[in-house]
Image (cartoon, rainbow, N blue to C red):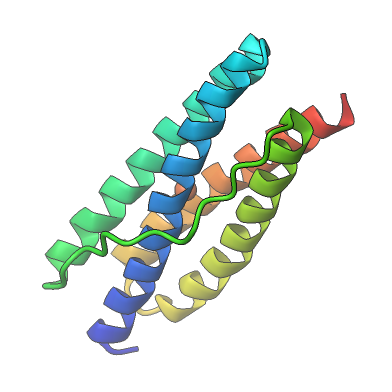
Length: 136
Ligand SMILES: [Fe+2]
């Protein structure tokens, strides 16, 4: 796999992360307004985790000689807490599927692959927490 393809994959990942950061943070503030403090705290925690991912991806992109992406996808901001959890769970499911593909792409680049595997583990943990919130 060429270095440019790896950089493109890392930038696609970064776009997802930047979208997640903003979406979780906005949901955090809205959930506070809905007086759901435990969920609001969790959403802020997720946003911070995504920031760490966006940062780590940018560091790797720069190390490979690329330029980090700054764009995001459109945010989904529903008014109800259950809907917020659902749109975030969808986002995480898409991210998990994408990370699995990107990990395959990076099979010959151990540093990138290990980075992506670490992020994937975090996304799976967030998805599990979101799923259990929906069950409540
Ligand atoms: Fe992430």
